[in-house]
Image 1 (cartoon, rainbow, N blue to C red):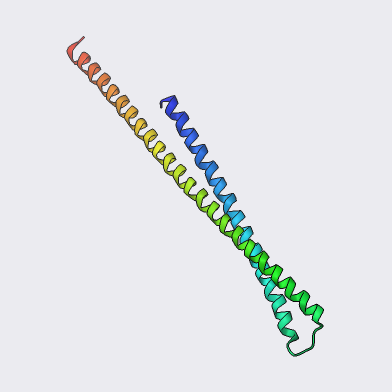
Image 2: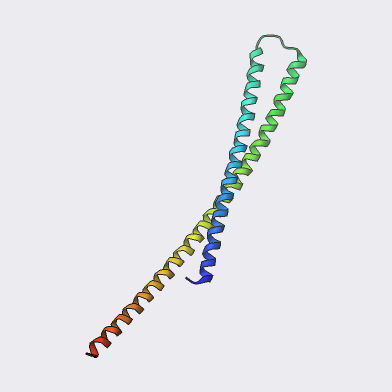
Length: 144
């Protein structure tokens, strides 16, 4: 195989593996951020349930104000985390597109390498057949 083509194939394989690793990392980040968002949402539901649990019971105004302030901050944190999840999803999508591009490129290079191997093998087979034909002709022409 052509050494330049071999180097291209190695680089293409390396880039494809690297982009696959990056994609895995971005997907893991997305999953982590989604888990954080879920935790915040569950935490907010718990606090809202506690507040609703007071129902008709009297709750000191200061405590009610603290609950509402905390819930407002929690709502703000959830909105921020939703943005983080959105951005992490976009980054994972970009990483996936890059991996697909690298994978397609590697596949094309691999096909070219296979094609060149087949051509080289066919040329070698043809040469061997030609050599055998020449020997047979020489042996057939020279009876002694």
